[in-house]
Image 1 (cartoon, rainbow, N blue to C red):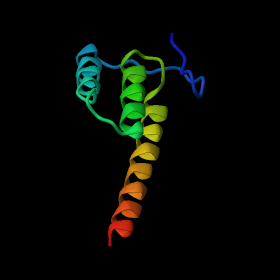
Image 2 (image 1 turned 90 degrees about the vertical axis):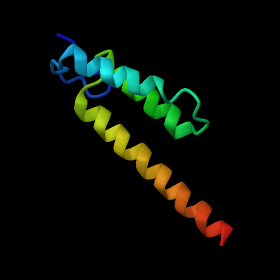
Image 3 (image 1 turned 90 degrees about the horizontal axis):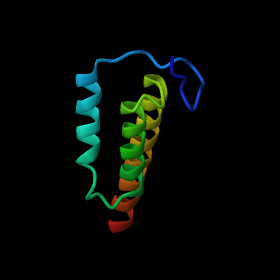
Image 4 (image 1 turned 30 degrees about the vertical axis):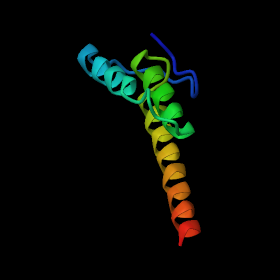
Length: 80
């Protein structure tokens, strides 16, 4: 049994086809310059390699997308 690197919970079993799809999607982030997108890619690869659990992956994804939204709003306000 594998344990999550972040929370030390047991990583639940997912189908290999699902994990391959996640890994393939993460590979599509390779041309992004944003730091948050790079962190999302790393998190997706960790999840697809069963290094972190689904909860930690989704929590990290929500956190990073929130940061991206806040930065976009701040940038929009500065352009106005």
